[in-house]
Image (cartoon, rainbow, N blue to C red; front, top):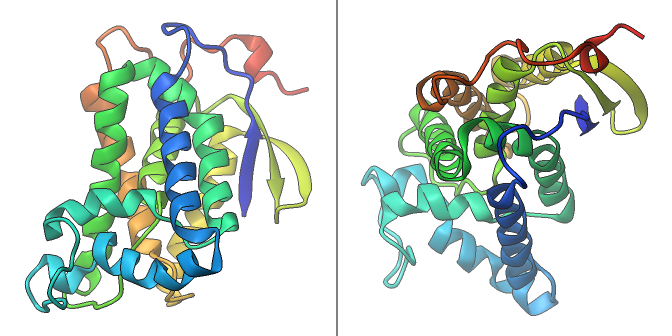
Length: 238
């Protein structure tokens, strides 16, 4: 597992990645509101049932008790993106969003980036549901949307050298393409090997694929791809 911690790619179009920062704050606020105190943790099952994306509910195979879900079922594909089960779940997603999100937002602009992020999240949720439309467990977390950001970064800056951690503890500096390839291989392996069923691996893959596709559709015409604008200081072999 490769977790990026620093890439050093400067902003070129925008002064600051305000949407990326706002998304991180929104996810943090949602976590603090639902998972900090013991009472909040006791109520979290209610929150995930009300705002998590449950395939069987979204596609009409099952109905929840009166009062649930808390929003129309299709909208849970969006609300679920802001719920996390643990600090590790939250921090892992937000670190990746912080490292890669600014450059994807810089490439797309604030409004397009927000649309991109949410569309990747929805695509990931639908990919997860496609495996079993009658699945009764709620899907929560920003992983699908963040996976879309990873996919877009791969297309924008594949040659950039990124500092990251392998197995959460070994620091290495790899080309983004290699680090992301390691990450993608893990997602595919987990699906093929029927890995940990508590994690929505197909949501990660769906979001990643959506990110790769959408960066071509949503990018401005003058936005270079495949590292064409990256200088040698970002892509050297030292």
